[in-house]
Amino acid sequence: MQNSSRQIKLGGIISYFTIAFSIIAGLIYTPWMISIIGQADFGLYTLAGSLVTMVTIDLGLSAAVTRFVSKYKAQNDTDGISRFMGIAYKIFIGLAVIFLLLLTVMYFNVEHIFVKLNAEELEKVKVLLAITGLYSVISFPFQPLDGLLFSGEWFIFHKITGLVHKVLNIVLMVGALLLGYGLYSLVVVNAGLGILLIIWKLYFLKKKDWTPITWKGFDSVLVKEIFSFSLWVMVISIAQRLILNITPSVLGMTSGSKEIAMFSAAMTVEGYVWTFATVFGSMFLPKVAQIIYKDDGGPEAIQELMIKVGRIQFIMLGAIVSIFIVAGKGFFLNWLGSDFEKSYFVTVFLILPGLLTIPQEIASTALVASNKVKFNAYSKIIIAAVSVVLSYLLSLRFGSTGAGMAIFIGNIIGGVIVMNFIYIKVLKIDIWDFFRKCQISMALPFILVIICGLALNYAFSSVTWTTLIIKSSVLGLVYVLAAYFLALNTYEKELIVGVIKRKIQ
Image (cartoon, helix red, strand yellow):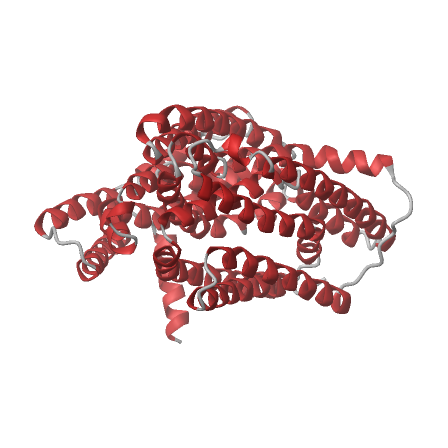
């Protein structure tokens, strides 16, 4: 086991570097890549990826690996790790075979699934599906490697591998496209790098934290325990993938490749916002577990932490969302061109619910820590069901915008209404007190940015990068000043001033 505080601190810093690189590279690389391969091929590239992602679900077993290996390490039970990993690898290999069969069936029925695609597009999808699917099947049995790295607290190495993978992926894809290899080179590069990454992780674990695997035998009791834990995690995973990853497939059936491309661009921006906003909250699982199990804290202790963390998350997320609402259309027009104007409206629908749900991550984490994860699953099932059904119905008329509206409605019903009812009934949280001390008391900076942004848009109607940067900078300054003087409390101000002082020193 490693120095936890050092691993978490440096791992977190590397995570933010990775997020920053992903955002910058995406803003620059994505429009360039689309200009090289074309909007339609970009939609097909996204479609193939979403198909494979939708099929290759790990059924919550990756989370089980982290949990069980961590438990055995705490107990110094090396034999337990060996037996568990033997069973885990057998399960993952078995699932990989099943996924291969499913993808094969899908490959030979592509033309019956995506009736809106023409013959040339169908042929391209089949090639993309073959390459991406084969790589996913080969790499799937090695997913427990991440669980081993996390349970061993090798966060620095894990985050470095992720950053290196992203950097090399962009560099090699740019090189391949410049050399004229085209659409298929994108998936070949990704697959090749993925395999090299697996070899790197295996080498690291063999040198630093190797545990022999027991392949003989099959402990039915342990298997039952594994699946009992992973069942609800699996349900959450399936539901989450249905919410966004199945939408390109729905649009493929109802609207065609251009609408897929517009939704995919919006999904990319939403992914950046979600990643930035949730990295902070995910670090509090140990603290929540300590409150519940060690300190025997009640709802009041959870709510106190929920408010403290939620306020910080809301003030950060509010800045991004408010500025995007008034400057986002210009961003998309400059970034991807007028063909992607609808992506702005889709993005707004995708990120708005986060203003209510993301600041409540502590409560969601409390459900997981207290072994009540099934309630999270109920919420995700409702979100997925509403989103998928409405996506099909609304996209028939409104295309990608209809799909965005559907996901927004699903998140409000399942992620806000249902989850807040669960927090009240199960965790005994005073949710109205939370909203009063978090979103309501900190809403003024958000409102001021919207008002100032609308005024700036009226006064300066030109759509250029220069205008966009100036507007965003002015709005960012307005938000920072309003937040500091009108929203933050003494503790939060001292926290910010302390960080600035350490940076200066």
